[in-house]
Length: 279
Figure 1 (cartoon, rainbow, N blue to C red):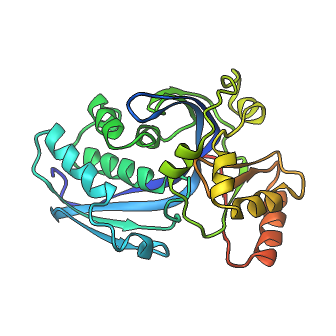
Figure 2 (cartoon, rainbow, N blue to C red):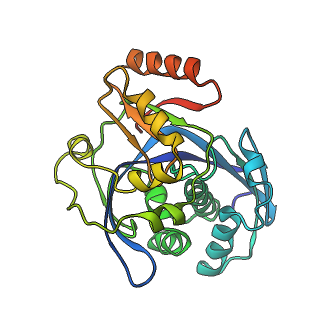
């Protein structure tokens, strides 16, 4: 690495404000239309000079303790190959997002690692080669690398940035259930319910849907309870993110969000709740 000091990158949670599944593809993926957004909180990835390694800290580190080849390390190896650099970098992942929860934790971590490596090697963070690496590693990673509100098509890697409702209060809630993305997609009913509408990001979100919600709710009935709790108090929108099980609600005011969080923590003290805002 060129830099001799540590580099820290945020890995904010991703939410799918909407997710339309249009068709199964012959390559095993699905044709999607999704509205990506990001919040102001999440994991952090720190890169320091040294041999390639990864240490995981934070409240959700145990969920990754048995993982042999974390996406951060895969991103580092792919970066080294693409930019003709040695495989190096001592990474620390501070894990604050639940694992396998539909908010792009692993994808956000990989994207943060790519940004950190780019900064450490004096490479622009919008270099097209970074997005090629991201797309090869996972469908959500290009969006996490971009890190802003965008429409995603194809597998989600074809991105069109949009202006989003920055600063809007958001509450994320997870019932403590890990949901397999592959299982949720496999359980999708195969019905194309139509394209995503055009317009401003918030209007698109309000007029759209998440086509994976029914199959995820069948696999993880706990999602029903989360959505029921989030729907109390008249939020602007309450919906599941991605393939679940994390759900979100958008609010007009911070006070509305705080009241919802207090109510949910009282009713379900074991649930993970994050009071945050759209980035």
